[in-house]
Image (cartoon, rainbow over all chains, first blue to last red; front, side, top):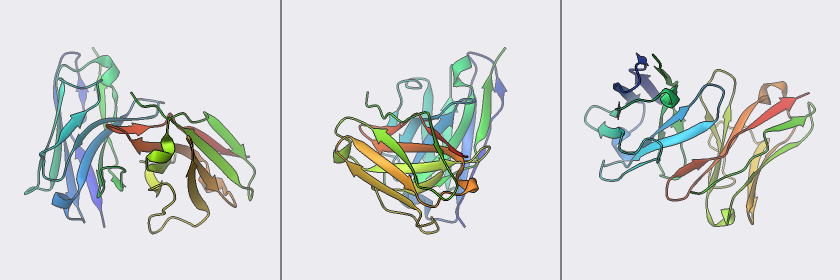
Length: 118
Length: 105
């Protein structure tokens, strides 16, 4: 059974940092492209970051570029999101998502809540 | 940046056929996927590459694309289909539509 389990969501102050992790199991992680997608309270889905299966290609949404860093460790079947210079509008549920193709998501995690507030 | 436009809400009667549209510039040149998100749950892939269904997705969910519009059609709509539905494509990056709330009335 495919599982994506996110960790690390928490309450953070504006300007602070958080690191999210995603543990993958039930599929060959190193063969899959990975994304982070977030959903602000009551809002729609927003793609924020992509890393290809080998880790050599990375892209970001403009809203998080230069603040967030996506990475992966294929030996540990894990995906990460380093979130720096957090803003109030970064408050959202963050989903780890995988796809055999770059162009869609096959599997989603259960999400982890990040709240940025004073 | 590329944009996908969906109607905010669609209503359908139980047992009837409902459709949700997704519009984008030259969308027929891109693959479209559709996701269902029930309240409090993670999204689930319903359709990929415009019309293909992953294993386990009921046949009453179908997808099509023509011109600038992709369509998700739900036949024999059931109460459990009440959810938010998102279209998605890939331009230079992944792009989601704003979502459509399907009400089964």
